[in-house]
Length: 229
Image 1 (cartoon, rainbow, N blue to C red):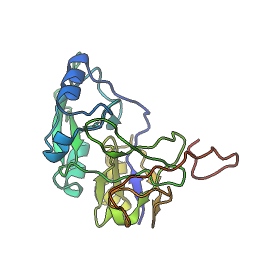
Image 2: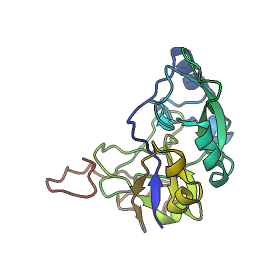
Image 3: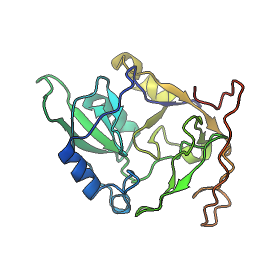
Image 4: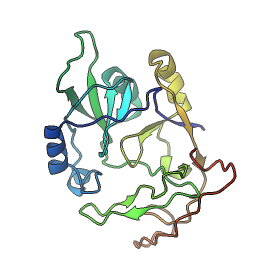
């Protein structure tokens, strides 16, 4: 089984307009920028306004837990992401052409995603604010990984940070993603049998309700495959 993160040839980070930023942070976000506990308990679609449209068919929204997809890509993924929540993405100073499929935000209907930072140099932190979630990576150069049991039988899924969507190789073939969306650059993501970070997170065997962070790693000198360069 191979798993791929959906990326495009464009490395871009979208920005909310000032009004949309106030709405998102006021209603849906914790101070850590992630989705708050109220949203996770009752997930709903989120509508946003952006400063400009994406260049590619999928792009993350900065300082948020959101990603924006072209609507036809969301349609192609929908059969593999049951319960996916779709909100509207609009743009202050531009409108797509009449024949354009438009843009949407996509979020997991369960309110939960899969933790993708389980590589050997990844480290986690508990949010000190409202949501109290454990996640993220304190080490920007650490390459992530996904634990196989966390995927289960899902063919596609959101990362814990919902800016990212992951698919199995069978989805790329069945939905003809490369042919239909030529800007996509699916990035093969490591899948491991057990966490490599040395930390015990919620859902791991041995989790007792107490998070015990470990020391930050030192950047290796050699060409380590677990280092993002």
